[in-house]
Each structure stands twice: as structure tokens, then as C-alpha cells.
Image (cartoon, rainbow, N blue to C red; front, side, top):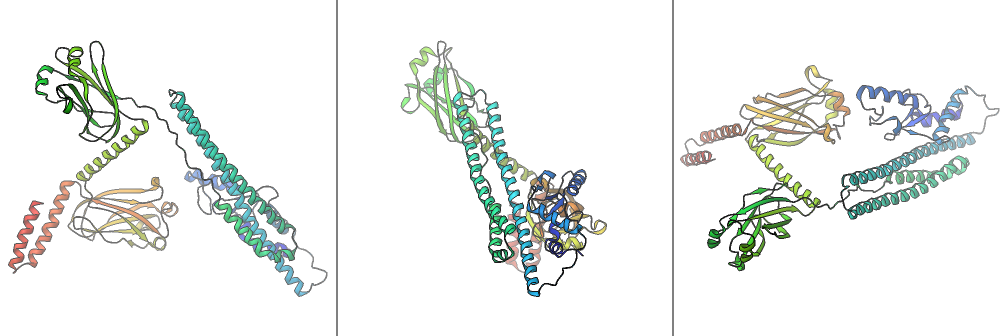
Length: 575
């Protein structure tokens, strides 16, 4: 019969040293960093290769987390797991052993068995703690190396794209790089010291377990268990607090320029009619125009030419602008930075005195101006472009709603999904009211229905109460990862209490193993809309007419109610 020590070891460790694939004692063990299960090296290599060829993504056979062979932890030679596995293998190969020459006393035998159990339990705990340390060490090393690599790539790519920068800006970028690298290196030193400290404590506990007598282990059992638990918690909490870095470059954007000619100056000077340039658009999308007062404005009247730049439409903010008066022998230039508000001009009352204008710049009773505008710097320009994009997105969304207006758009949760998946039962959402007057609900079959039982997730939409009409409806099966969200759309002429939808919304395996089920529930978004805005108005009128007819029936024989009905009809017509 097998030795008592081998039996106890197998009984205590059980599945901990069993390969989860071949169900035998592991050979050349590999540890999954996610679920901490052990596998034979050959078994997990073959498994990952087969899964990758079938699904494209290798995954752990126990926890189904995406993992490659290099992600599995390989234990160092002489580590606790190697010793335990080899010990179990040797014990199982020894066959039978001879009985003891004499039968020990009952009390000594019980103490010996108790000490052995404590020893094995502590060794198992130590094994798990050592695996946590190895996994943490590898994780920290990879994260820090990734930070260094990404930081260097960011620096190199930025320098490559801005090779026309002046030396000062190059210097600033290098300074940012070195500062961030110093931060990463500082974290590397801090975490290395922390890991060294934990490793020292781990080795001390390991030495106690390996070299301590049975009596010492029994007396120090609680302390060692607390030490291992604290080590595991501290190791899991270690993480580099290095935030992603973005380099800044204050390059000056190119200004956008336009020309504006003022003609028949002698005539308009007498009347001082304000001259406006055409509306022009810059590269951000803001609309500008130049405002010229031929005989001056305010305190500059009859003394100077007044020129102002006006933000007619667009993004308010600070801009750099310039106005240049062109002349045969030379130009007159003015530039400044100001905060522009909509429809308010900024410039100079005394741009140039009228005598100098007539003597040096008038040609054929006209003069020409060039005006330009730009954002203060690239960061400011990008900020204005983002604001402009947000405005355009809002306008597009508004137009889209006018063209295809939603009457219902809600996120809802379906619970008790796991049991329904096994029993192929139907789960119902709460009843949702649209803005027309209809009531809707979803029928969800996590385990499939009819001929699709056990193979697909089925989802159907029911018009619980309302007027039969054609609607377009969209169902989103939500996921924490945007790329895995499932979206399907149909158009159907709904009749009350007659569900319509998809028997094959999503395959059963993808649904169960794809991470859609969270805490025994799934999240869905439902959008219901008429085919277009005119149809929505038509549907709204149908619901109003039905409501008014109901009021009319209830108001029969009540003159006051009839007059109220007439008022309601007038309001409806006005709407």
C-alpha cells in the first residue's frame, strides 16, 4: 500500500497538483495567472494551440481568460511546487512499504499525524504565496517595461514629426521625456525595494517551514498563516502608479488671410457708411468679417480710419489677428491678440490718420486691406476644433432626430438569466411607454425558443398596447467592451400582443462565454422609432384622436365636457 505520507499529501493537496486537462499529477507545471490552476506544460501547450486554431484567441481551459503560453507561470527549479510535485510522484512510484516493526503508542501517532497535516497545509499555503510573488514580479516588470517602451516611442515619434521645430521646443520635449523616465525609474526603485522586502519575509517563512521541527510548526502555525496571508495581500496591492504621458508642443499655427477692397472712398467718406467685407470662414469653421469706418468711429471721427475685426459666427475665445493696409510704397500693419465674442468687433479706432491714407494709400479712389486670424497656438487651435466638432455633432444629432425621431430609447436589465438559459424559459422586461402613447416590452429567451432551443439567444419586441403601425426598432446587447456590443435592427408593422424579433440574435456559446452575463443579468438598450418625422406626426395624431374619442364617449350628456372637448380639438389642430 502507498505510504502514509504520500496518502496525506495527495489528500491535502488534491486537485491543487492535478493537471486540469489530463487530471493527473502535473509534469513540468504551469500556473494560470488568472485562476491559479496548474497544468502540465505539454497539456496546456496542446490545448492553447487547438483553441487558437478554432477560435483565433487562446484561452485558459478553467477560467476562459485570454492567455498565451508565455503568460502561464513557470516555476523556478528548486521551488516549493517542484519539490511537492516530485515528492508526490516518487511516493506514488514506490509501491508498497513494509509495516513498522512495532506499533507506536496511540498518542504519539496522533501527534505525528497532526504535525504532518499542519506541515502539508503550510507548505500548500507557502506554494500559493510563492506563486503570487512570481506572478506579481512578472507583472510589475512587464508594466514598467511597457511604460518605458511607450514613453520612448512617444518621444521618438513626436520628435520625428516636429523636426522643423526650433531648438528650444526640442529641448522642452527632451526635458519632458527625461522627467517622465525619471518618474518611471523612481517607481522601479520603489517597487523593487518593496518586492525585495516581501521576498525576504517569504524566504524567512519558507525556511521556518522547511527547517522547523514538528513542535515548532505546531506552535507557530497561526503566525505563519497570518504572515502568508499578509504577504499575499501586500503583493497583490503592489502596482506602479505611472500615468500615461502626453508631450506638449507649442507650435504656432498658420494664419488664414483674406483681402478686402474699399472703393469710391471719396463718396463714402462724406456719409461715413460702414463698409463690411464678405463673410469668410477660417480652417476651424468660424465666420469672420472686417468692419471699416471710412471717417472714423467715436473719438476718431473725421480724424482717422477705424478698422475692426468681427467674429460673426463660431467659437468664442482668444485669437491672434492682424490688419494690413496695402500701399504703392509700403504697407501699414497692425496686429494684436484679443478675446472675441460673437458679433463684437475688435481693432483700432485710430488705425491710420485720414491725411496719410489719402496721400500714401489711395489708388483710383480706393484702398485694399489684408486681414488674417489664427488661434494662439496648436493646443488652443485643437481645443477650438474640438468645440466646433461638438457643435457640429449636436447639430447633426438634432437633424437626425428630426428626420428619424426616436419615440423610445431606454436601457433595461434582464435578471435571472442563468436559470432561464438552462430551462429555455422566457424572461420579460418591464413595460416601457413611448412618447406617443404606446406600451412596449421585450421577450428574452436566454436558452432559445422553438427550433433554436439550446443553440441561440432569442429576443422579441411586443407592442403591449397601442395603435398598429410600422416601426423601426433596434436592440443592443451591451458589453463592457464596445467592440463586443451586438446591435440588430428590423422594421415591422406591429400589431398589439404579437411579438416580433430574432430567434437567432446571438449564438449560445458566444452569449454564455462572451462576458455578456454579469451578476446573473444582461443589459439591453431598446430604440423604437417611426420610419420618419412625418410618420411620427401621423402616429401622434392617431393617438390624440383616439384619446379625444375616449373623452367624447365619457363626456356624452355633459355639456361642459363637450365644450372642453371642443377646446381640446382646437389645441390639437394648433399642435
